[in-house]
Length: 503
Image 1 (spheres, rainbow, N blue to C red):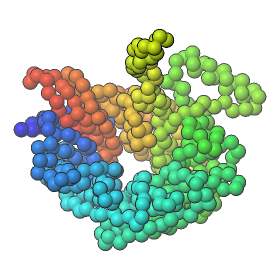
Image 2: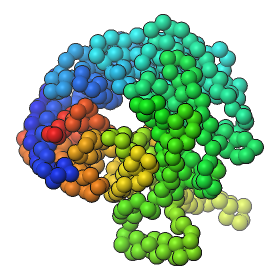
Image 3: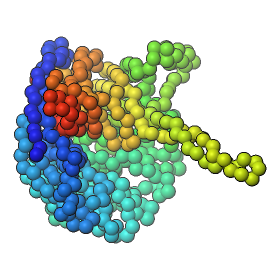
Image 4: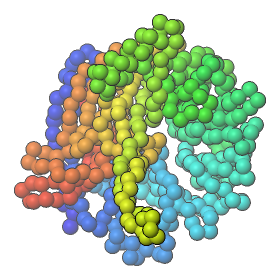
């Protein structure tokens, strides 16, 4: 039997730009973990609550061949358990996400080369399955659910296409993205803007003058607009990019840039505003110009960087350091634009192996050799940079980021962010605890606190799959599988924490 333990904590933090005290109320439920149950994800559906997705081995015995049974359980904003629903879907998952409207989609690849899309409404707890039948061979690379439409980006016969399905009527539409060079074009971003019910596809296309960036916007199941964004500064090439539509119909384009046309590591962050296809402003910021950007380094390394910057500046040149960055979409508030990013780097380990080598007299002997093996990406720090409505940097800051390694950094956003006119709060999981950092109007760090995953009567022994996300209002949710020790002995629990900050 599953047991649920509820703990309520109240912790005080300094948080607003007026240095007022902010209180964090933490409500926690602990679900006794069973060996047969895998907790897949805990998903926010805003003020409607949460959806916990699990997979029970015992239930798979009744599943049809090649199918799996997933359990969707609803919790309200007070973490009270609601309805649970079992849903059957194909057992070859290729993608999945939750939309701001509370829809969870689960895409699977069938044996016939088709795709089944499970759509689950977290508000009504009802599901439906749509089969995506491809005309010819096509590979789906990314997909986004916005409103009544599912947009699937992929390739077919060398063309970049967007396969669009009306989830209510089943009507399908295939749009081929017009590019100049079929062999030398690359989709570097395919993202949704659920507030404006749009999907944005950015294609890096090779033309005679060099690489240009093309933005395609989709709405209501059709290709809506197309913009060509040429490089406006020599030696700076866009690597990652997001688009955010403003209330006046203009677009804020943000991301990272490199000093090479086909580079991977980047040297800075950019911000552009496009109105009716025309550039309003464009600004590029070297990472090393961001306050505290090298704070993760030792003092000695920081001094070296500063000396190199000074020597380059004396020659009227710019000193840069290459980084791998996972950027976030711009956050707009009060005509200001906040950009956030996480820096990561590859890590390696040494592994031994034995092979047989000739001895010289016709025989063979075993010999131990060593090789360097990639074992994931680690993170060094994150940064914040805020621009005014004209694209001028108002403030910036950075801080070390201690989180677990990952194999897919582009899919991981560790920071959950809440921003209003009075405060900027960040929450993220870090090695068995949650971190809360509060920043002021000028980007100064006001307070940093650790929030435990367990109560004082418990000892945390191990943790798995920790995640946090912004929920609604001034609320965050953080969850994960924990192994704890208390008066009842050692136990495995799935912990869900609601973190609420007063205004």
